[in-house]
Length: 95
Image: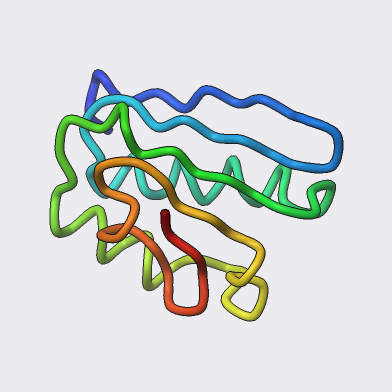
């Protein structure tokens, strides 16, 4: 995992907000997937803010997109920030 990668988690009513900070590599992708697995079922909407990312490694992006376990629920995800369009899954929203 990129040593500087962190995920900040905040809940607001029925929504889950995740702020990604640092470099997004393969290990970071699995960390994000694990956080989503642990919290996704209790949230109506999930907002993933990418403004704190310094870079996205192509391998990390591939790992996230290929291993995301909730493909049919990706419409409940909104990606925001500098890399929102880059990391957004098919069927999800990006701002």
